[in-house]
Structures are given as structure tokens and as C-alpha cells.
Length: 266
Image (cartoon, rainbow, N blue to C red):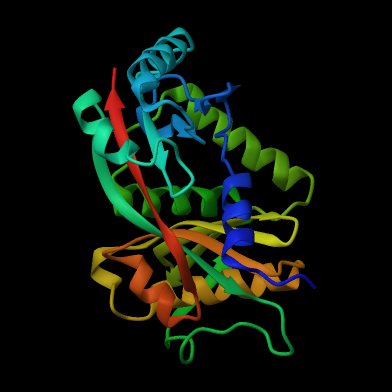
């Protein structure tokens, strides 16, 4: 088995460019964008690579026009160590893109003689289950919306997500979405998708009233164990520096670097 060096982890991170259901993807020599109509929060610009740096403003104008033509109302540009120009993060604010929170790219190797586990035992009274029914899917959405405060999606976007969930359920495929429960109350949620040897963890959070009880760690442990059972060699995640990253570092993850999103609304 090849070693998961930092460079290989970054290759895996770059390969995992999420295109939301219902989005249109456009790839040019300068960027790779997934445009979700009516949603700046679900329109992502990946792989920004522009040289010389003086071309950045004109490329951003082209990007804006393409997004608008597809019904987009804004975008989030992902800046990483591989982005060019190297000082893109310094240039974007003067070009109408506001900085959002910084994230750490974290990896945890899952292969080995013992399955991954959280730091400590599963907290008493907490159960973590993969979403299998539409009722559980609704609970997942409710927790995620409250935790992250997502702006409302266009109805067509929500319909596309639900259709994808229904398709996977009908095919007997895992949903990749997980909910933490205290009794009959959903208190935390998170997900992961499997891409060959890479499990991409995403969207984990816990309701404020249930934080500092080990719920987040339980979500990490459940997803890592499921990913390992399904053949993943590593778990990969972008985690907020001020919140989830420190928890994940305590659960066996290591950092390979940081990224940042910059957001503009058109």
C-alpha cells in the first residue's frame, strides 16, 4: 500500500471537487466551477490558476458572467496552497470577494489491524445511525440547517438533493448521512462519501444544547468505522480552525495545510 504523503493527500483533496445535485460544472484553463442556480452558497470555484497575476480581474469578470448565465447569484472561491497566483487571498477582497472562515485539511489513516475508534467510549445515551428513511433524512436536514444556518435553497435544489437520496435508497446504496440521537431527539449530523480509498467527511455539527458531551466525537468514530468497513484507507476532511479542527486532531487526524473560501454575491 502506497504511503499517504502530504502531497498525495493534497492530490486526493483536489480530486474531490463536489458538484451539488442540480449544479452545472464548467471547466476552463483558469478554474473549475460548479454553479447551483439561485445559490451563492452552493456555487464553488475550484482550482483557480491564473498567471500572470495581472489577469485575475479579467478572469473573475468572465467567471461572474458564466455564473450569471446559468442562474447563479454568487460564488465561493476556494484558495489553497496550490492556487495561483500565490497571493490570490490578498487580491480577492479588493475585487469584491469577502473572506470566510479558514479551514484545515486533515487526514486520518484508517488501515491497520484495529478499527478506528473515538478518543474514549461512546457517551452514554448517545446513538449514531446512518440515515435510511425519509423521516431520518428530514431530521438530518433539520439539524444541519440549525447548526450551520444555511441560506434557503431554491426549491429545485432541495428537490435535486431529495431525488438523489431517493435514488440511492432505491438502489440499496448507503446514504452517507449520519445522525446522532439522544433518545428520539436528533442532536448532531454529519456525512461522508466514498471515493475509492478516500472517505470524504463533511458537514458535521451538533446542536448547541448538546455540545461538549462527546456527540461530535461519536459522529467522527461512526463515520470512520463505516468508511474503513467499506474499504477506505484514509478519512479526509476540511475542518474549521476555530471549532471542529481541534476535536478532529484529538481523534487521530493530522493537518496537511489550510484553505480558505472567499465569497461574492452578484
